[in-house]
Image 1 (cartoon, rainbow, N blue to C red):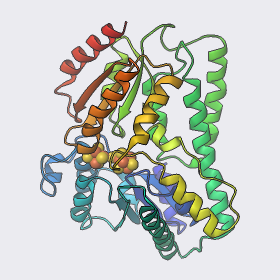
Image 2: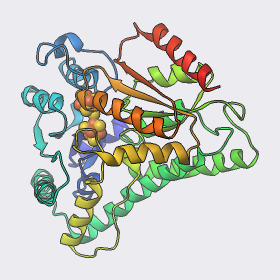
Image 3: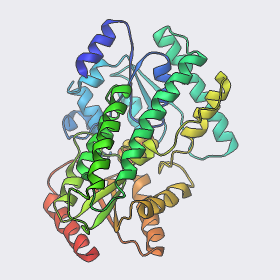
Length: 367
Ligand code: BJ8
C-alpha cells in the first residue's frame, strides 16, 4: 500500500491524512486524492510527543505526534495535507502544536446537533471541498461525487455485512481479526478492500451454514465499546479472547461508528449530495457531542442484535468524553440486565496481567 501511495504521488495525485471519521472520504475521493487514516496505536515517540503536549494526554494523540516526530509512519510522511478536527479538547490543542510539523487544516465539528450546528457543519463540509479542489487542482463534479458516494457506501455495506454475520453462534470470526479488518479499512484502496471483504463474507457465510466457529457455541459473547483502537493496538481484544470469551462487535470509530450509516444516493445535484453528506456525518455519535443519547441507544441495539452477553467499555486514559459516557452506558445497560466492565488503559503493557484478572473475573461472572 505504501508503494501504491508513492506511485500515486509520483503520478501527481495528492494524499490526505485524517484522524477522525468526521472527515468525508467521499469528497477526498471525488477530488481524485487518496484518503488515509493516521490514528496510531503504539507508544513509539512518546518522549518527543511529551515535549509538545502534556503528559496527561491520551495515548492516541501522543502516538500520532510521536510517530510524526520520530518519522516512523510512512503514511504520515506521504501526506500532502492532514485534516484535523475540533472534536475533543486534547485533539484540538494538540493540532496547534502539530501544525508546525505537517501541512494541517482543522475542520470545525460542532458539539451539538441543532439547526445552527448543522449550518456550521455544512459550511465546513463545503470548505473541505474547496480545500481539496485547491490542493489537487481537480474540480469535484456531480458525477465524481456521485461515484465516490457509491464507492464509500459499498465499503460500508461490505463491513455491515461482515458485522451482521457475527450474530451467529458459534462466532464465525474472532474479534481480533474483525478489528484488524476495520483498521485496514482506513488504509486500503476502497474498491479492492470492498471486494476482499465481500469475498471473505462469502466464506464466512459458508462457515455459518456449517456451524463452524472460532470458539465453541455458547462461549460468552462480548461487545467492545468506546475509544478507537488504532493499529497496532490489539492489547484488549487479545486479553478478552484469551480469557474464555469471544468479541462479537466493536462499537467504536474503528468499528460500527464508521460503518453504521450510509449516505443517501438519491440526490442528483451538488447541493443535494452535500446535504446528504452533512446529514450522514452528523449522525455520528461521538462522545464529544452533548447530549449524546444516540450512542446509548446504539450500544443497546448492538447488544441485542449481536446477542452479546456483556459489554467491555474501553476508554483511553485521560479521554474525558468516553470516560464520562462509560458511567452513563453502564447505567443504561443495567436497565436491560446487561453486565458491563469499564476499563481505562493506554498503550503500555504494564497493566496486562491486572487487566487479564479483571476480564477473566467478568467472563466467569457471565458464565
Ligand atoms: S468521531 S471517537 S475518531 S473524535 S481517545 S483523541 S476522543 S481523548 S478519537 Fe475520535 Fe472522531 Fe470521535 Fe471517532 Fe480525544 Fe478520547 Fe483521545 Fe479520541
